Image (cartoon, rainbow, N blue to C red; front, side, top):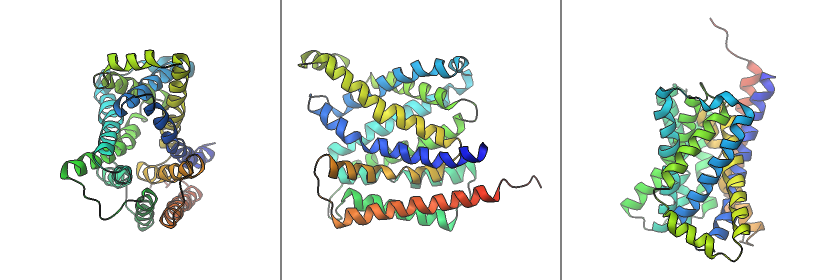
Length: 307
């Protein structure tokens, strides 16, 4: 049973990246209704929090109780990670091209590896560094970033902030999973993030946009689907995967998101598949294969003996 759980962990993280990769479909549709990027973030986070709070008592009725000393941990997960990285990411999109913002977001595996070495004493390996290099290069090619684009210092810092915040979820999530179930971790994380988002989104303006929609009920249903597909399912999968996959490896596996986003662009929005994008997809897949080979080798060797 334990071996099967170890084997499914990487698959859950890859699936999470695929679900995240579909986000463009929902964001573009909600943007057409006049919602600002921050308001879309708030809709997604708030409805996801509602989903998780409904799911949590069904899975574990005692999970609503958390130790007061762990409140800062969940503040870090909700405000410092989820809300911070999404606001930084959407701010970066407004300051530079989407491709530049995307590649700065996907510096997250680098930050995860550095933080894992610092806080968890994870040992770096040549294979892991190779996979990291392949993933970052693949993300750069898939995003289509141009070396000639000018990015201001403020834009650079905001973009890198999105990558740091994104990576912080893996680090703090790993710590939280030592004490709480994946369902409790995701529920409290999104509940905290949702409360924080209400301070930024302009609730009155957002309510007026819902009221002005031709089909308010249909819009609410679409918002619920957005939260389910782009937040509830992927974050639950990712958090479950973190229970058996080390943080640095999880961060690289999740880099399938830009690959999935590129495929969505090709299949849904008829965007052309360029040669650099195809090469980037191949590099990301190569990184995933390398890490899966590492994981299988580790599981075959078994746990180290106490001595």
